[in-house]
Image 1 (cartoon, rainbow, N blue to C red):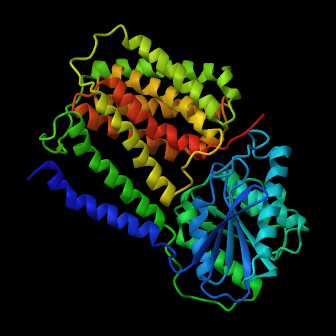
Image 2 (image 1 turned 120 degrees about the vertical axis):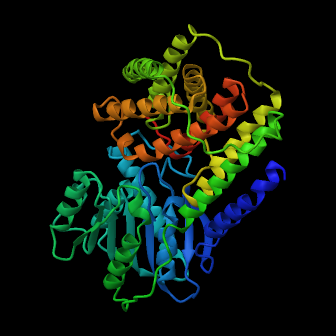
Image 3 (image 1 turned 90 degrees about the vertical axis):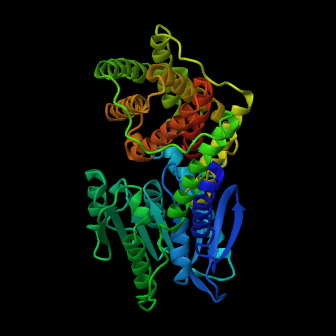
Length: 490
């Protein structure tokens, strides 16, 4: 049996299962896309058309309406009409934030304007009771909805998940505020949640066990507590029936991504002219010499530290993509230094460099963009993101090519270089060289770097040219960074 024939049943199971989980989530609910005053909005309506309470759901920094889609499923299934918005600079909203800090006065005004648009649109819907409106927000969105509710006492209730700052709430307002925080979140988020909730008797705080800043969005407890709080605020009878599983889309996206990844090996084999090669076995990798590993670690550490310091002063920091300007400079300088080191070493052995191998690049784009867009967050570039994508991709392609040359295609060495790159980036955030927000997205970044290494391992198996490997693997990292980090001015 051919390689494709042996893998096709598994690929079909993963693709069909992933598609069913993603596309079947909340299928009985009515969904509409709208835009008002330039703000993209997603409506989710319960099956019945009677007037319902309405809820605006707001995402966090670097998020989107799609990231909060599971809250639309949960709340609409319990009889609420939901409007999810893309804040300025996020998701499908091409208007940039006034600056790169979400807490600045300009950005604060922009977020409040967006909420005003979303609330007005929600109240205008024919199946919404305009006198019964609530707000739900996460992280940056939690601060925004709390601030908005404090200024608009007609808002019935507010749920603030991972609230970053308790100063947006006072002892006077808002009323009926629930704060939630993940048990594994940083102490500052716990302090903010407790501080905001402790100021009034009609407030409460909940700690969601086993979750951090991102996974709290997919915890069933988070959704149950949200529904229970809003039901009490609106006087809705208690409903103990099960809620839709919040992680359904996320699991579906993971299955789709795995299907794309597993399909890549036979595709790469065909592109490389090795279609009859056996499927790679999960054999224990041969340990590289310790001396080589130590040398690569030392060189990478020196290059990344130099890159982290230099990037703070490069003109790339002026690019209109928050945080990415620093990361671009960091990746480019680190890559250039590693490449300078690699150029003194012997060139790699014979490699395959057929033009058709470049078809691996669009395949890699589809393999990362489709699962992310369907099951996680908005992944289609809009506005300035298209040309910014080319810059981010170029910087990470340089880093990836240099890493391939230094590592010599050894997966363990590639992982070592990626680990040092992430560790030094985290240190840069801690020391103030770049935004502290980087710490909150370390786990997704680690996942992307690991994903890139897997793609590299597949292509190295067929002796593909390092520059083709670099272009293919780097787009797996560059695309999600470009479409999720906020568009921002200065």
